[in-house]
Length: 370
Image (tube, rainbow, N blue to C red):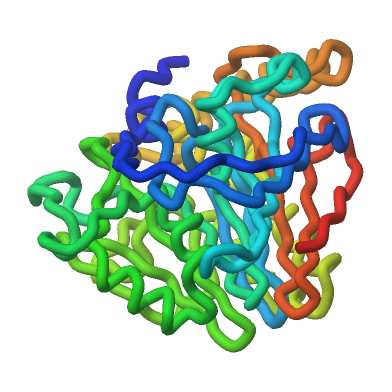
């Protein structure tokens, strides 16, 4: 399979803007299970830290809020990279937080041997979703740029403090208690996009009473109430029939009423759109198949013919890969994707569930508290 285009979409540049640095104060990373660690930071840099090749970026992800629960699937290459639960304490005006993230290509052996000072400095900013003590939850998913890269992306508010959109999860959790405060914070900054030609992020923000999705379209922030988000702009006027992730969106919408009653019900909903379901031809996830092969969906004239041509060999190859994983563990590099981590946030009780790799090696629900 050719992954060059897919890699372009995933690897989105994050500008390193740090000037003033605080002392990083943390406990040693604790191993929770294979490929899962936990760490607490008391102090860390107040300036954004990290570049595109240091943080595992977002891709074909899904986010949902229903009732007291906010669920998120993080879909990415199913390699040996470890997942890390990062706690930060309340200090210097920042709220206490818990978030889940990764450092690119950092595996168990590297963590056990001891991370570098640079990696430890980046880690608080490497979370991909999280919650703070006020019950604010933030998750972000990759999305195509609304104008397909035709408009120069200067940022949303030139002349104000600059914040790359990849850094918004940490910044919002540290500084905002409500959705309203988060929207104000974003509007007071110049939110800059990925330096990818085609791809950016959009953000889902929940507090105890409401949920908004924030998208950047033609350098403007568009924020509206919305409780389901995958990988296309939900606020564009013209959404293609098979926009990236539309099939997952439709599944989440169809079964939305089944979630919201408990952590378990939200977990069951998110399992419906675990990424490996795209390898089942019956699901007809055309856009996700297109992503797997690095083909932009607008370039595929006949989706059914495309699916028919690859579904059998794709599923056979995937079955072989699953068998390999169960016997040998994850490879260092792979062209396959899965739901690398799933997180369910209990907003009222400040609880978090984390599951890894769709249970291929570890079916445990790992439970954490803020």
